[in-house]
Each structure stands twice: as structure tokens, then as C-alpha cells.
Length: 272
Image (cartoon, rainbow, N blue to C red; front, top):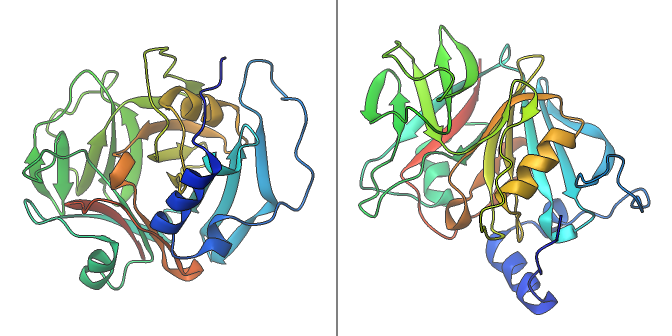
């Protein structure tokens, strides 16, 4: 795969200053030499900063990956045990908030990320369900759904299992699907750009993984390829709103990834 040309170093450091309030948490020093060859031919090699998941609290772990050995494409991953944590969607139609404002709005949340795509009037696109209240129009033939029913979170493909009016307590939608049934599902070579990404996935143990790229980011194909060849054991995953909307807060790690744009909806994590 031909690798896209990255921004120059000056632009990269400007992005760091604009998008992160904690350089130590965003650009850690690798503890092991970077591999010189990929493990899987044609795949993006994965470099893990730190050999183990960092336990932030019981059932809440963080890890930082560096796909392709490129520091500026790193991915911050938060892995959540749904037996210990609950998920809630928060939505303010037409009244977007920045990260600091969302922190003040939901002070008891342990973590949150931005959710659905939204229109210029700051109303979400796709389906969103917040505490049982349904908003928007469900995607039927593209993207994925994160939903909570009976307190149990799941991620599924909208093409394989369209929304049929189920009584979900919480739900968010976006596109495209990146992983489906344990396999890479996005393989398009359509023109794309390197940009910050937010994504959500579920592994074989049912844990939910929230992912964000704090620096320059990746193309969708790079992200999908990375997830398929990583050691996260993902079964299903899809892309959330990204670019200027990418936002992540992890309270136990004192980690705050500020978005460039205010967003009207977030997916938040609470202790049970």
C-alpha cells in the first residue's frame, strides 16, 4: 500500500499544541525498539507504547498504539468491562459543547468520546437514543450501531442487522464499519485524507473499546487495516465522527483530548 505523505514537522507540532492538554500522555517515550518489518505482509505494523494495558481502575484499561511506526498516527485506546461500567448517550440538539463544557455537564462520567455525525444546525445524523428517547433516522445500509439493551452493550453492522425499532436504552450510529465478525470490513481504495479519527469496537470478551487518534490521524483504510491486524481481538468496530470533532476524556488518567469543534452528542462511561 502506498503510504500518504504526512504533514511536515512544523505543522505536526502545531497540531500537538492545539489538540492536547497533556503532552506526556499523548507522546510517551517508547519502551522498546520499533520493529523493522511488519509481522503480516501488506499490513500496517503495530508498535505498542508500553508492553501491557495500563490499569486505570478495575475494569478500565488504557493502551497507546503506534500504527506503521509513525508517532503522529498513534491511537489511544480505552478498554471497558461492561460488567463494571454502564454507558449513556448525552445529546443537546442545536447546542453543541466543547470538551470542558461536557465535563461540567456530566461530572460523574469516568470517560467520554464524541458520537454521531451532525449537520450544520448541530442536529445528529443517523440514529441516536439517549435514555430511551429516540432521535434521528436510522441508517439501514451502511455503518454500525452501538446499542445498550437490558444494560448489555453490543456493536453490529447496519447492513447485516438494520434497526427494527428495538427498545434500546442507549444507541449511537456512524459509518463506515471497520471490522465485522472479526474481519476487516473496510477495504475501499477510494480517495481519502489523513485526519483525526474516533472509533468504537467490541472484542470477543464483550468489552467495549473507545479509540481516538490525538495527533495527525489515519485514513479510514489505514485505521481498518490496523484494527484487523492488532492484538485487540476486535469482533466488530465502526468509525465515529472524526476530524475536528474527535474528542476524548479519561478522568482516571487525567487525559483530555480537545476537539477543534464543539459537538452536540457524546457517549459516556459511568461506574455501575
